[in-house]
Length: 91
Image (cartoon, rainbow, N blue to C red; front, side):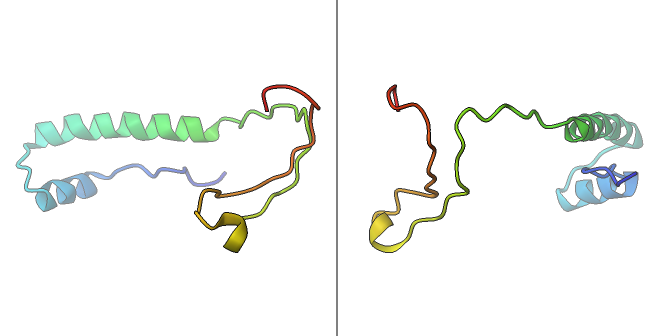
């Protein structure tokens, strides 16, 4: 089993963060915020564990490339790809 994407926050890390940010918290407050942080970490790890949806490819496309020079002289394009698709329509 692999390590979680977001590691759990230890109480020492939370205390250190409070010190660095000049927060004065009691042990009770640290416990409350620690529990809140743990639930956020659990949620992030749950989302990370889900399978990414795979939608069917309707029109094949190439990997594309990052245009440079004269082809992108105003830096308007980040990536250009070729998608073979319908001969008519909005695009």
